[in-house]
Amino acid sequence: MAQPWWKSSVAYQIYPRSFCDSNGDGVGDLPGITSKLDYLRTLGIDVVWLSPIYQSPNDDGGYDISDYRAIAPEYGSMADFDQMLAQMHQRGIRLMMDLMVNHTSDEHPWFTEACKSKDNPYRNYYIWRAPAADGGPPNNWEAAFSGSAWEFHAPTGEYYLHMFSKKQPELYWENALVRAEVHALMRFWLDKGVDGFRMDVINMVSKTYAADGSLPNAPVVRPGFLQPAFTLVTNGPRLVEYLQEMRREVLDHYDTITVGEAPCATLRQGVEITHPETGALGMLFQFEHMDLDSVPGHGEGKWALQKLQLGDLKTSLSRWQDGLAGRGWNSLYLSNHDQPRPVSRFGDDGVHRVASAKMLATLLHGMQGTPYVYQGEELGMTNKPYASVDDCYDLESRNMFRTATQERGIDPEVALQAIRTKGRDNARTPMQWNASAHAGFTTGTPWQPVNPNYPAVHSEAALADADSVFHYYRALIALRKAHSVLVDGRYKLLLAEHPEIYAYLRALGKKRWLVVCNFYGGTPVLDVPYRAAQRVIGNYPETGVGLQNMVLRPYEAAIFRLE
Ligand code: NOJ
Image (cartoon, rainbow, N blue to C red; front, side):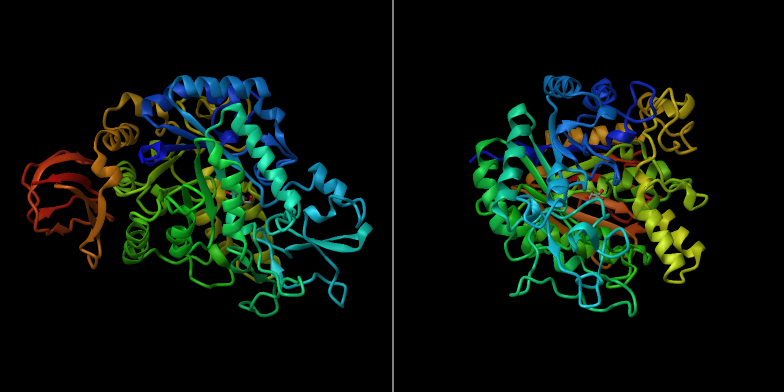
């Protein structure tokens, strides 16, 4: 059987609100995206993953949908969408839509109907429970965006479940009607010609109910406070059944790219869900490597910062590389709209910004899987310099700051530092196109300010500079297209214990390629028993002294074809 096209593809994520504004209202839009397709073509990507553009009250950046079949007016019209899709296809770029079907907006007609009465036909589209004996929420769960995961609906006297904001009620997937609605809306977009879906928190659709239908309390990790409950709402007993059903009902009838966002996913689930014959989806976005710089099991979750250990990163990425080889397929990512900028998080966004951005790109694009580039990553865009909590536009950060400082007694400076390090606005400042006002993102006032470093970091400068991060990404993407060893080659970690160097082999038939990354700003000596036939790419000028005892420069990265 021929290999699916998406295995040799590179995807690019667009967060539409911050990509390109064509009409000066300060919000990115679909015509803005269309106007930048040649830029994406130059970069060489094959697929766009478009974050939500559907009608939404926009409580959570559009991840709260009130109409799955309508475009949010601030992004344009359905005609703009059709035009964008046609223009993408004309350039050989496919489109992957964001599918949010674990929850809707509370302004979706299903939910407004459900609120009308306990016997409304839509009531059972959502998860309702009677109050606890004291009138409080049915259990001790905390939502991802702080506060109880339950919201009381006074007119009908019950609580509804929302694992994110209270404007994002969870759909009740045990109800076959809900699943049929999901299948129908997927067909709607596929019939329009879209090429697949990124599925938001898809492993949360099956929850683990007790025999009596209740949802049990989460174990207490933070006495006296609400409890993180993510492990209880992910990977429920019917997840694979639901995904198989979706595959049978919808996906098998189209040629699609699919990637399921899967917090708390284990390698075993990765194999089960992405197995080429028996799985249901093409790929997962697993989170293991995104969690390594937070204290494991801590009540403050992702905000409990710890320094990343390179050894942990090697162990985690290698486990997924080895574990899915021949039995599934990896998505490769270091960033998206929920994560800080990789060059600030894992590299050096000061003097070594360019070198370290290229090093991180080499590390990722050298691996087996489908790489995802998040808008601005290809420019080495950096984290946002938050001066205070007033710089937060994202409700997750704002809510966390409020609960942490007002309810949990956390020092405001500590909470702000956590936001600077992990806040989602880091990735959501507008795209930096040129050195004109607001980085050329808008002629109006941007919905959130651009990063003040835009006069130095923008795409116009990057396109004009052959040594830019942009051209390095372009070269890496082209390399993957030209050499199947980068797509199909087996991965083998080298120098597992080395404290500064991340190195690995890729092997396919007789071909062996070596990927070397100096993860820090020191000058470690590389010692591997190989001879290079050729350096195929690198982020420093080539020295020509070969591999033996090669002194690596700060954040140096290179890929070698071995003899
Ligand atoms: C994951 C999305 O990526 C994130 O942006 C969103 O807030 C949550 N799911 C809830 O939809």
